[in-house]
Each structure stands twice: as structure tokens, then as C-alpha cells.
Length: 406
RNA sequence: GGGUCGGUGGGCGAGCGGUCAAAACCACCAGACUGUAAAUCUGGCGCCGUAAUGGCUACGGAGGUUCGAAUCCUCCCCGGCCCA
Image 1: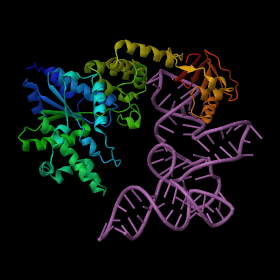
Image 2: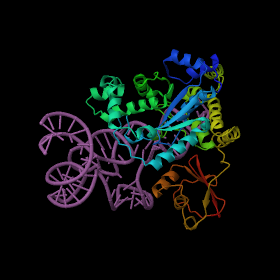
Image 3: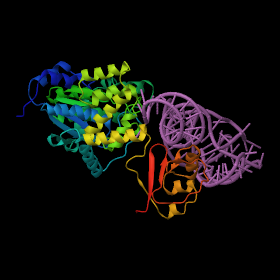
Image 4: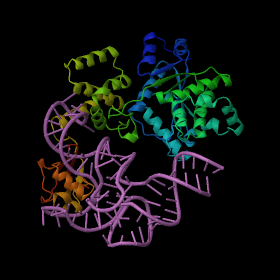
């Protein structure tokens, strides 16, 4: 049996840093101190495999459990993914084919592998216990829970009270998810704070199956780069786990200052006292917030890539945005027939794919956003002759160098 | 099945016969500034095009009324709510 770490310091970090709730805290503590590997459950939704830093917050917590020697079991929600979204959004989900779910799950694990040791993880497919579920099983499961309890969930009660539809299926979802805990005999479940209710349902149901109720731990939902809404692909305020170093660095730099601290706490291992000092200096205006953010950006890029890439990304960022210099790596614009036949700057922007329509190209030029060989062009009728080596700049971030190559 | 309210630009949502390519807000793009791709400020944000108060296509779909429709009428499709 593997060794399990039980030191006070390690447990304190585990239970406090980047944690919203630990339920039931004292029980969980006792179990962690007992020195036996616990069965840690983490459910994965395989319908959306595009992961961002918000997910990474959870992965880091999962890794902490791994490092202490606990056994992590990932449940691929391949079955519940099909019965619809529980959170009341009306758009019904598309049914995914088994192959799609499989592919998504693999992508998910690959990305997760940047943080968690996936080799040590047990992967459990929900279908393996739900495919043989009978109507009788479903009814029995439902019998263990009450509508009253379901309505405890804020989302349900507000909608119900406000005369809005609450589908019966939505009641089923937490029950099925709770049953997962029964199926794998979870000791502890981990997830975002939005999962609180579902985890609680599992606690309620487990004793009826002869199990101890699971404990659980929730982490905060990371705020996105806009500084207000939670990080999500649909708000386009996310930093993807798979983003390239330069992109990742830049996106972190575009964070609102107010959320920096949250990022440090949930996405880095920098000890709290060090953070306190850093932010103290910043508030006393002895330290530039920009540099604090740069530190954060370096930390994050290092985690998902490596230290060298982080430094390179930083150097690049300084060049481009602080010094206004050209990037070191400029995309190539093919010197093709379309570009050759361009007679004005507007034609050229279209041919070079730097503008979607002539109207847009015009706008960019008129607003002073276009430079050719570092000379600003403001007249839309400026004649243009294609030549290799020309450098286009559109806005602050889009560049292109004309080249004979394919 | 009956009733009722609605379907408008990337989002939300105003407009309810001409002055509407369509308010406001958000998102997005550009410029200025800066401590950064932050904040703030300015401009832009259907397409084609200009010296332009120019042209074209658009307000769920198809027809119609009108000199003129996102706005009125008919039918159809889709959604919310209420009653059965």
C-alpha cells in the first residue's frame, strides 16, 4: 500500500488554499489524517473538451490529492451528457455519438495531463454501470429522494417560484450523478463550487446503499480575463490550457488587476506570505502592478509549457507592447496572383487576408491602423505594388511579411 | 385544441407606415494615452463604393396593401406563458 502523506502543513494547504467549502470538514480532516489512501472522485463532462485555466484550478487541487498519495478516479459522464443540461439553459444539448464522447474524453485527459499524473488515475465510464440500469433501478433511485430536497437547490426553487419550467429530467441529473459516487464507492468528491448541491445529494443517497456518505471539497470558479464573469468559452474571456506561450502570456497580462490575487492563489504554488508581501508592496506603490502581473504570467506559462518559453514570451511581449517593435516571428503573406494584382492598399489588405471586406479594410486605413514597412497609411487610395519583404502591420497585433515562398 | 405575447444586427433589446442599415447597452475593431493586450478617453462596427445627403441587400418565411413596410393584412414556420 502506498505511503500517504499526513503532515499538518500539507493538509492545511489542501483544505484551505483555493477552496470554497470542505464538507464535512472535521470528518474529512480525520480521514486524511488516518493515513489510508482515499478514493477521490472527480466527474468530467465529455461534451465540451475545450479546457481553460478555470479547469486548471481544479486539476491543481486534484494533483495535491495525488501528491499526498490518494487514489483519484475520474468519471467520464458519458451517460448523463446525453440527458441534457441541468442548469436550466433551454438549449437542448446535442446527442453525442459514442465515438465523439470517446475522442472528447481522450482530449480532456491529454490536457489534464499537463497538471495531473494521468497514469496514476483510474478512469471510469458512467455507461459501465448505467447501461444495465433498468426502469426499476431508476424508480428505486428516485424513491430515495424527495422533491422537497430537490427544491432546496436555489436554481430550482427560484425558477419554480417564478413560474418557470423545471423539467423532471433536471431532477434526475443530480440523482444519477450521485449514483456515480455509489458505483465507485467514493470517499471524497471534488469539483467546482457550482457542484455543491449535487455532491450533497450523493451524501444523502449513499447510506441507503450501505456506504458512508462521501465528503467533498469545492473550489472557486475562476473569474475570466474580463474581471467580472466566470471564465468560460462562451464569454470569450478564457485562457486555454493549450494556448501557445505568447498567447497565454499576453492573455494573462490583459487580466484586470483586481483578480490577480485569485489567480496567484488558485494557479500557483507561491506561498501565502510571499504573496502578502508582494501585494503589500504593490498597494504601497513601491511595486508596479504590471510587474506583479508579469510574474503571474511567467508562472502560468511555465506550468503549461516550460520556463524557457515563459521567458521568451515575456521578452516578446516587452518588445511588441512596451517598445512597439516588430515581433520576432512574423507570419508570411504569400506573394500570389491576388496580391500581385492589388493596386491599392485596400486591395492589398484583402489579398493578404488582413481584412474581411473592403469596407473593413477602408475603415482600418482611415482610422490609422495600417502600416506598410512601418509607415502609416491613411489614404485608402494609396497605390500599392507587391514586393517581397514588405511588412504589413494592422492594429497592434497583426503582422505579415510578403514572401515569394509558397 | 383554445387564448395570448413574441420572433429585429455577434449578444441583449428599442423601433411599430416615410427622417431606419435600424436606439441604448455589451462584445468586438482602430486610435490616443499609459503601468500591460489593464483602466480611461475618442472613433468605428451589413456589403459595394466615394468629393457623396450614393447604390445594394437586410428586421423568422412566402405572398399582399401602399407612391413608400422592420412597422399594416393573409397564410405558414418557430418559441414563451395561460386555459383545456
